[in-house]
Image 1 (tube, rainbow, N blue to C red):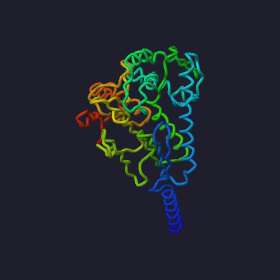
Image 2: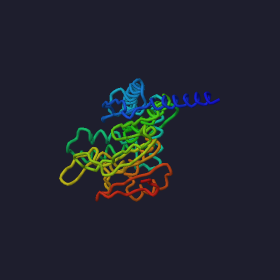
Image 3: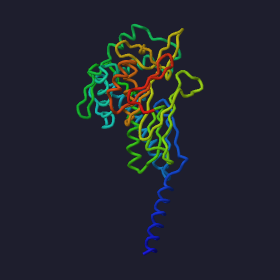
Image 4: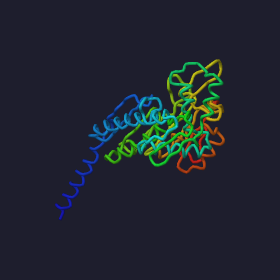
Length: 325
């Protein structure tokens, strides 16, 4: 009887050791440039090289479908269809519908049809040229998410001059899809970073949380103004310090106001959202910035799944009511 108990104990011990050996404190990683930003994926589970490679391939595929600027992408085809219906893949339609949900939630202050304005301002390459006011006014007149008609897998822009830009939600959606795939493959500890859109699978192998720094606005060293500890959650920031140029004393940044065609003007430097869903965090970070401090904080305080940090132009941090420090 004692020998049997000893054998069970030994087997249990071997099983526990085997389980521990499946993860490492040092992750395996892949880093590449996609979506006009740096993509980095860390997996702490051993023997996950194939999973990492598959994740990068998935990112490449998503870019080929979701990119506004990549000629031949599904969104490019839709934007250049002259108002004709275009049949799109399931993922692209799902992402467009998700974007439309946040257009409705924000009453148009987040609008996925700002594509022509995004092209005009071109914050990726623009180093200091404010577009002509008449051109802004003309392109702004073609902004309106109500022009997007989805019928099954067919999408149509009723205004032929309208164009979709999914930059405010695509990376979050992609991160969620990568998480689902990795969990299906048995990954239990990982960190997905799509240009600052960060999503954690589990925590660190030692049981502690990931500690994610939030960038201090305009800091040339890239230092953090604060940090957030999290497991199995996503953190996304939107701010005027990410893509911008300055003319005299005026900062022109990439978060465009659909109703004016110009960058939003408020007292915010940035908004950080923490959610289970990276797509939700992505869309809410832009939406809350657009709403401003008061309305944005009210939205988060009434959204059970989300927490937020607002950074005002005096560099003070403002936490949502449910924030867990």
